[in-house]
Length: 140
Image 1 (cartoon, rainbow, N blue to C red):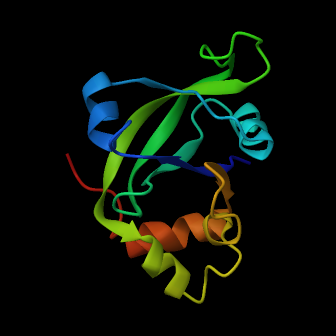
Image 2 (cartoon, rainbow, N blue to C red; image 1 turned 180 degrees about the vertical axis):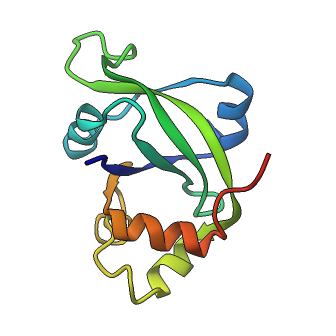
C-alpha cells in the first residue's frame, strides 16, 4: 500500500516553480531524524504534497518520488537521506495551513501536530481531504 507525504520548502530557497523549471530535484539538506526516517521510507512513485513554508504557508502541488533511498549529497559523513522528486501537478487552488487547521477531518495531521517537521507522513484519508480542499489537480 503506497504511503503519502508532505515536503516543506521555503519558496525563496526552493519553490514549486523552481522544481518545475528543473523537472527533477533532489530533496536534500534535511537535518531532523524523524524527517530523515520519512525520506528513507519513501518508495519510488509515491506522492507528496509540496508545501511552501514561511512564505505562503500553503500546499501548492503534488510531486512524485522519482529516485528513492539515496544518501544526501550535501552530507559529507553520509548519515542523512535524500530522494529525487518530479512535479506531478499543481493543485487547482493552494490549500493553506489555516484551512487545514480549521478542517475537523484533519485533527491528527502531522503538519499540525508536528509543525516544525519538514518531511511529514500524510494518511490516505488526509490525502483525499487535502486534495478535495485544493479542488483536485490542475489540468495541463
